[in-house]
Image 1: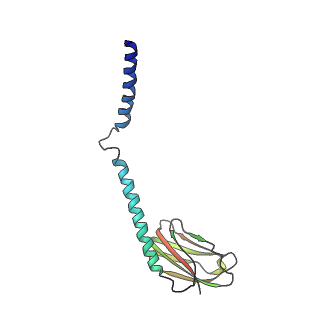
Image 2: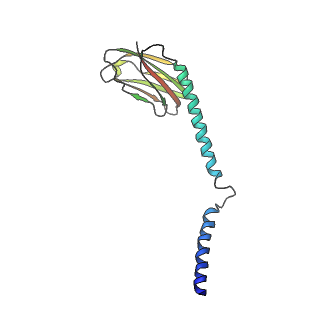
Image 3: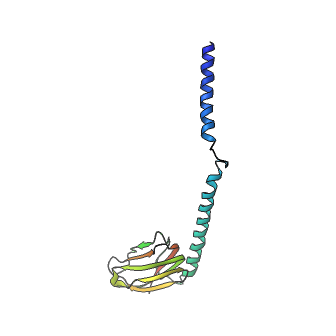
Amino acid sequence: MATVHARIGSLVLVPTFFLVACTSGGGSQPVHAASASPNRTTTTAAQQEKTLAGEARSALGPTTDDSMVASGLERVSDGLHTAPGLSAGTTYRLSVVCAGTGTAAIEFIPASAAAGKPVTCDGTPVWQRFTAKHAQRVDVDGDQGATGMIAWRIDHV
């Protein structure tokens, strides 16, 4: 019977040792302190993204009639890549606002629809008229290091 109690005592001590060894951390900071900083950074980034999105939407302005065909809000890092099914031969106006830092570039595919145009990510609206071609595509890509939000809208002219 004494042998059984000695073995049970060993079984209790071994898991307790591993529990202490795994949770000691070796440092002076509590384990939860290491995860607090990334959460604050994520919250701050989300708040900044929301603020920039509001600035971009506001600078783009409201639509005053039924001329809007398509619109959206994108992260500069994701860019805008849309093929909205525009009618070939019809003239449209693309409005773009980039709020943040850096620059971006508008590109029409096929390029014969209109020339590309630079966009500064300072909240200033940029407009480009174009005549849609068959399977028209519009891209707005941020240049390297550009950050922020892009608000865009395509209207009938």
